[in-house]
Each structure stands twice: as C-alpha cells, then as structure tokens.
Length: 377
Image (cartoon, rainbow, N blue to C red):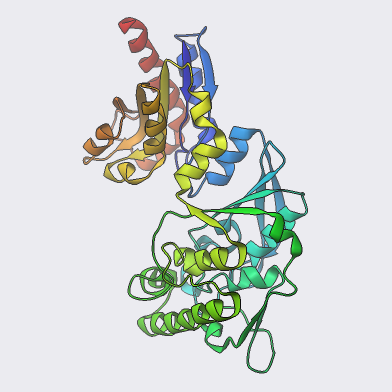
C-alpha cells in the first residue's frame, strides 16, 4: 500500500509535521511494509510557514524586526527547500498576539516589521515570495511595510508620515523612487482568505478594527484615512484597489501588496497545496489520511481538510480524517469528500489533559484505524 499522510497542525498541541509522524508511527505498528508519504499542510493561516518549511525540507531564518508598537521582536521567515521561495507570516512580526489586550491601538500600530522580514528574505536571492496575511494588530494599509521597503509616504511638508493607520489621513504624496529594486524581480503571492474591500461597511476598519482595539470613533477615523490612502494609490500609482476583494485583509495589507507589489491574492489553502505538490504526491496512492485539531461545520468552508479532499477526489482516492475534537455540525465535512472521521479522544477529559496526551492518543487512533483497514482487506 501507498498511504499519503497530509494533516494540518493540532493547534496548541502538535505541529503538522509531528501529527504526520504520529499517524505514521501508529500505522506502522500494523502495516510496517506500507509506503508512507508525509505531507504536512495548512490552510494559509497560523502554521502555514512551518508546514511549508517542513514539507519542502526548508529552513527557518530568525530576524530581529520592529513589532506592531515599534518594539523590537524576534520573528522568522522560511526559505523553502528549492532555495528560490520565501514564506512570511505577517503575524510573526505584526500580529495581534504581539500586543497585550490593554495596549492594542490600530491608530498607531505598524506593519514595518513585515517589511523588514521581506528585506531579509530578499538577501537570500529568492525569486518568489508567499506572504500569509492575517492575524494582524494593524490597520495601516501596509504603509509601514512599504516604508521599510523604501517607499516614501510624505505629508504636505515633505515629511515622512509617522507610524499607524491614523497618519494616513495626512498623506500628500507617494514616492516609490527609492523602493528596493529587487522587488521588481520577485513574484509575490498573498495567502488571503477574506474578500473584504479596503473601506466601507465591510472594509478593514469596520470589520476588523474593533478586534484590534478600535472604538467606534477610531473605526470612523481609520476608515476615512484608508479612503484617502486609496485615492492617492490611484492618483500616484495608477492602482485602483480600494474596492478590490481582499484589499482590506489584515488591516489593508492586501491593498499594499496589490498596489505596490502586484501580488496575486489567492486562497491560502490553494497556495499551500500547490507549494507542497500534494497532487503529484497522491498519484498511485491507495489512501489519504488527514487530520486537524478540531473538525466541525467550519472545516467545510476552506480549511485544510477541504483542500486535501478536493485533490484526492481528482484521483478517486478515499480520505480518512483524524481529529482532536469533533463538532456537532460536522455533517458538511462528509459532503466535501471525507469518507470517514474519527476523534482521537474517547473520554471526557479536561482540555489540558487532551493536549498533553495528544501525540499518544493520535498514535493509538492511527493504530486502531490501520487495524480496521487490515481486517477489511
């Protein structure tokens, strides 16, 4: 048998690579002679960087960068196994988890650190960059990122704008003359799983601002600032991105990637599946095993399992999923191509215990699944 193991991480418990290893360990206790292909995957959100690095034999590179509130933080980017592709999770440098809840303020938080990660990745001589956007503490339209990359965002006096989304209301001119020339040679792909425009009732400020500490008054001010920003992007760069789907992702980071870097916005799950080459790896397989920390109705709306099942379906392969926990509204998952679903925890235990025994339970569940398959064969 050839068995492809393509799980997501079990959040707060195991990385996708460790999940794949645990499943293989359990299966090998019953089917030691099978061929196992491990492909850690993700949906473009948290864990995407690690999954792509693990799946391609790449490496993580640590960098000291500017955090959301201008503090120095340690972040990292990934260099994939081909040596030509870098992966950045903006949340690593500019994420909301970097800022204590009582200090969050999208009026002044900055994406500069994400730009600094990009600069460091450029030093590796890459040709392609995948930027996972989401989980940000910012609402600056990617302004800080672009300033780090050499763009001048000037006020009426010719002075550089200070950090934060509110400062964009004073933007008078955009000067890209000093933007790092290497950016012109890079293919940018942004993992973007939301279709929000930059401004308006469904825009970055209104929808995501409150999650980042914005009051109703702040939301109004930030939205006006981003409207002004969009007008100058169109005037100075000739890029009309304000109402483009995805432009409002990550506090407007989508708009900057579109306008300055000509990025292609794609669903994160599609980017990951392409990058790890899952379609090629399932050719000739007998079975695909996947898994995730929690599987419920939302899983069918673009999560990892959906992408794995979609590819397996192209080759008429059965997909079995293992889950840390299962929601009551899980029926939709079966309609997406998951043939069977098994929780790995069978007793009512505290979450802390379930997390502590996650690897042990996963190995046991995989062994039992392999035993069942052997009996059926």
